[in-house]
Image (cartoon, rainbow, N blue to C red; front, side, top):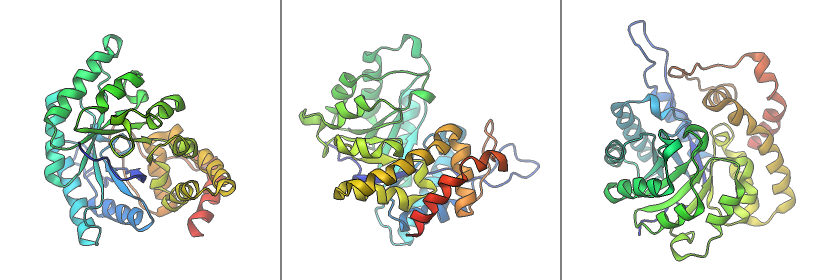
Length: 316
């Protein structure tokens, strides 16, 4: 059986792009800024990075871009002393063969796990058996152990039932899941399962929302793959540590702040995450079309209060 990623707080990192030249159709990768951000996260307690997830604009990157980014971050992390630092590579393709190819390229570039988005194009006629068959075909041939990525908002609102996760957990190359939705019942059913293939050392359940971290850890979740932690890594790691240490009063207070701040990423997605990284950390990035980077000062003012609260936590 493949081992899941270690428990803790992971960041689905934005992909950094510089301004395109007049003859470029899309902004090129900005690997220098990508490295600065990755090292900032590692230096502030983040357990690992998810590259090329939904926050990383995976669907806008070519396989060449993917290989360049993963291999660069692996090399830079190794050189900075973070040898074997956990790197999880996302996929967002619909085809089995394309997904396997991206997983092979990711392994060759230095990733240790794959985060495989559920195929939602044919949502209206997709059955649970079809989902199981698709993931089984990918896992059978993937050179990396994979986590199931259940994010209905970008997968045509498909539903993956607890019984489907349970069946897939028996596959020796499927080692966990990221659940990016508000259904705490599903988190609880997976993370609290006593079925042998679902124990936390074999199948790790991560929430995609730091605003749910306290209840998810309470039911046995492994941690979070959280967009807000791209902006405030120490604060989200602090929340994780408080919960694990049983410091309930302080954990509840910080969870309330994190839950409010998470709205920036939930409401504004990639654009909100990049705006926060720019305004708080000073690291700027373009987006690739159809997304456009940047929030107005007026829109940002809605978040300034809770951002200032988390700045204080980061400094503490």
